[in-house]
Amino acid sequence: MAPPITDSRVLAAMAHPVRRRLLDLLKLDGPSTASALSQATGEAVGNVSHHLKALAAAGLIEEAPELARDRRERWWRRTTPKLLWSSVDFADDAAGEAVAHAAESLNLERQINQVRRWADQPQSEQQRWPLGPFVAEVWLRMTDAELAQFKDEIVEVMDRWADRELPDDGQKRETVFTFTRGVPGRP
Image 1 (cartoon, helix red, strand yellow):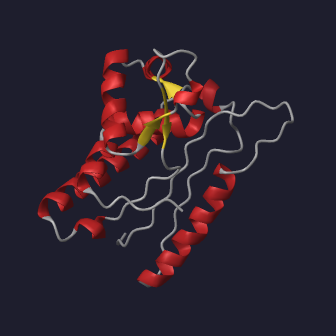
Image 2 (image 1 turned 90 degrees about the horizontal axis):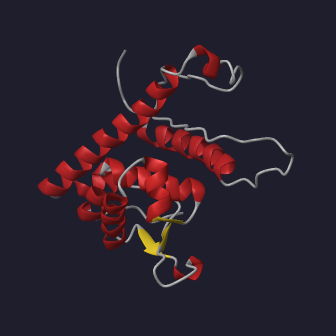
């Protein structure tokens, strides 16, 4: 398991929307260059390079020189497969707590926007996926320890699917965004 992020500067670097998208692409597609990431995101190459350098300074990515075909080409890869943090780790520092709160808010917005993009797709695109897309919600009565156990079980299922070997069966597999949350609340 990846170590949790406990440095507010690293959390701030990761939380930036463009940087988070770059991290997602590096996770999904593997190592890449600023040029390829620029094409994938629509961001200018110079802007992508700037954000890659910020992510590298934070230790979230590193160069992959063995992939370069010449000395001018720079490849980047993630240093850890998962990004984990807990707001609790920043509770003793007002600035860190503010960064953690902002990161959580940006992360939630990112997740909601992924679902909104799907909901805004034309019916013809949604009909290509008649079985898979889902919404699941439930109200439960739990202790903190039970919620932690529930989280571990959900994450285990997600990790199993994320880390699986893709079958060589000729079927085209498209990217799918999945997220889940469990927080105390009232209807």
